[in-house]
Amino acid sequence: MEGAWLARLRWRQRGAWLWPTFVAATAFDGVMGHALPLSGETQSVAGGLVMGLVLNLLAVLFCSRPLGAVLRRRRSDLPTLVARNYGGAFAVVSVAGILLAVGLLHRSTVIAHQRALQDAITRAEAFIGDRAPAAFRVNLTHLDTFTIEPGSIYRTCVPSVDGARTYCVIVRTWLPFARSVTFAGYESNATFAQGVN
Image (cartoon, rainbow, N blue to C red; front, top):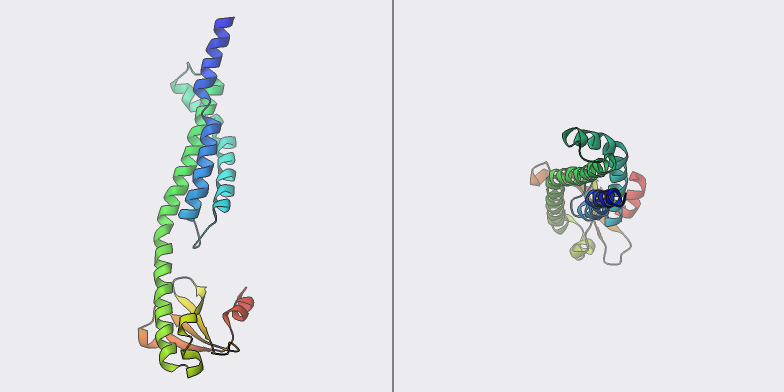
């Protein structure tokens, strides 16, 4: 009887990979979600942790039994509990791998949007520096840019010297430089954003 208990303990120690893997993979998902967001431009570490936690729980709930059954077909000497544990650990690692792959694929979009934003700011600065009234031109270092459509349409404003008004332009990055910037009024981006949202 003591020999059976020791054998069971040995199997439990060998198969106890699920929850340490779960914790490590969830932490990895949080950091990776911040560094390589799946959508949008940014994501907080906390948001990545919550997403990883939910996806990992779902993977354990729905994949550990089927994967454990497949593993037991190949290795019939494994106890069911250990096989399920291995299956759950594999599911959690797979979730981390999928999230990493999607984040890497989305990274090129994030970089393209950042380049488009910089291009839009450069175009707006040139337009404002050339055509805006003098009260606005002196504040070119205080540009405020609002993204209307990531990668293509931006609204950039500069405050007047007294800060009472703003001079704004719309930049369409797909158009040739000479036609890409148009005057967009004196409404600040903060007010404009309230109407958009």
